[in-house]
Length: 402
Ligand code: NDP
Image (cartoon, rainbow, N blue to C red; front, side, top):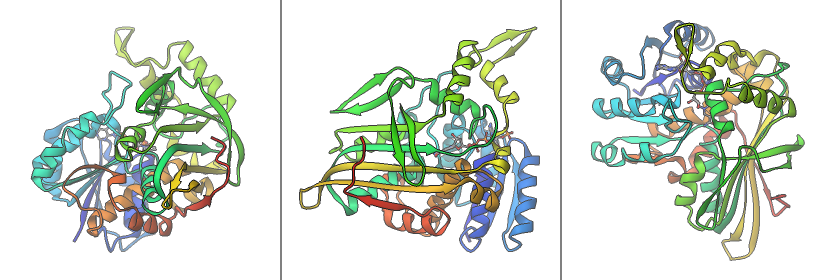
């Protein structure tokens, strides 16, 4: 019997719930809990209709409160929590897991609400306590972070003696037909993109202006797309876990229309995350903007095209000869929507989260402590990932453009 509690019923939570229900022989009991229970109920109803053998129930929790979380976990006594709420809730959920003896998995690292800043130190600080409690915490198990780290671990295990240059490349070549919309939570998305860029070079972090460095990169079956250097959280753990890496960067594509809207949003102060007084009410402009932007969960219906996310790595192969290696997945928005009612950005996050939880529940990724995904064996994960809807491909010894 393996019971999981999924916290968060947004785009990603919906996909995780679908994939757990499809694998009901592993996930024998699924509880979907979030702040707004009606959203969980709607997802559960759909799942019961599609997968009558799945055993799913719903609950309500405010995941900012350790006390409420502990009540939830004591009520359901799951083996693992799959945290797909917002990054702000990571620490309260980890704390509750420790207090209640439950294993933990998430897809995004902790961010304080009042500061657009993410780093692993807050969550790595829990290492000793999880280890002593005999509990496993798996951090960053979406696509990027997540599969990007597993791809890198796979490259290290099977191909490289020394990985020297790592570029994680993330392209969304989809079109949702809206002038401006974000593909996942707009608040988290805009905070991520408007901050300074940062990459790792020869043992140091180099800071750039927001979206300052860009160049066209060619994505498989998509073609060239302008790609922008961003800071992304998995770089922090990957350069520690693979110390031969000399340079590590992260690139993401954006269309001109998207960037123009983003510039206007910033210039008029709507990307601010501090409180302003509006007619005696305190509001945070970025949170207000979220309320008027299209809901990312509603984009799926008219979304066409594919995402393509992968790792381009160069260095020395196991015999010491130069090697270039590109491992990636392309995911269709239409196919993701047909299967789960969500677009590919939620799908490519939710499938790896379910896969990571399955790795834990089937005993393949059990390691007390707090770990990033690249610290586990990549082989069983990548096998299941491909079977569960995210097949991956490799290109060896071709020009990486970078
Ligand atoms: P959504 O905004 O669609 O969903 C978030 C969910 O969390 C909502 O159901 C929301 O409830 C719930 N929630 C928010 N605050 C609380 C709270 N205090 N207590 C309980 N529930 C709460 O986000 P997404 O589904 O798009 O993203 C989910 C996570 O996935 C985020 O952390 C995001 O950063 C991460 N992500 C990771 C990616 C990766 O590749 N690694 C890529 C994309 C996303 P309510 O409906 O009431 O607001």
